[in-house]
Length: 188
Image (tube, rainbow, N blue to C red):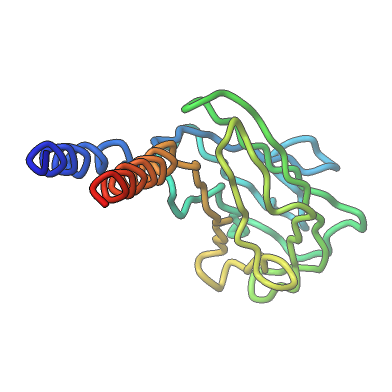
């Protein structure tokens, strides 16, 4: 009987890591500014541009990118009052779905300085069982001028999938404890 228990535990210990492995998530992102309906916002003689992701695959849980703002081509000027930005995340696997996060922009920018802040109103959302979180700094994402980091700001966050293997591991452990307890009671 001890041999069967040892073999069973060995098999479970061997199989469990494969079941508990991370889930692959494939997603893409797009973003539009409210005044233009595109991924470009005119500022002075240039544009603030959002570069979304065409297709990105990560193993969750993972730190991820939602895309990058490029201010390297902006001119000098303020952001129009009430300007909003909509980030759309489209997930294609493990299940299909879409979610959007809205943000406000405020401040002004020129090639050497910026007071522009991007503040998301909602930073957590779920698509088909995958939890996404935007890692927004306190006060919002600062959009940097061309003189800083080449004018690039990446919107970062996390993606996590609740692992079915977690529940399997808990259930298996409880079952083994119940069997062991039952055997002890039978012998006593």
